[in-house]
Image (cartoon, rainbow, N blue to C red):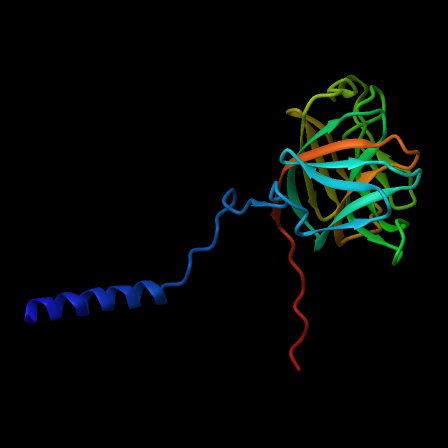
Length: 219
């Protein structure tokens, strides 16, 4: 009986020590989390009148009007690494916006830049556009044919302060430090361009949130 009690005490002590041990912080590379669960649009908000559904494990965006449409994250991100796969099923233009905000109740974007998505050759997929500044930077001419039409494309996007990197299908498209950034924080938004021809699919969306914000001072 004493042996049994001793064993129970040792087990209890070990469990208490383990419970009190602080959790090891995740190391770089262990901190990727899913931004899209493959089942529904939890964590995302529709902006505008376009159609966003989940079909066969992918987000399917379809233009049903001639206006802009967006699917934005509920959470805001300052700095991040993002991995996403996209497929163009039409000739419409799209993009992955970051630091985005909208005029309430409308698809009118008030701030944010986008990593371009357009599967037509020569449309600068991988470049940066927006914030009322039009084109900020686009890929070298020899990289304009890296994008694949009607196939899944692998896109890796990095935003760290004013330093932006895009990698498309294993090729670095831009590695750019913006000398005059205008937006610094906001949602990530998938876009359907105006015109009524957008037909895009997105899947396998993962993110490393590297954002660091100053905590509000305690009263």
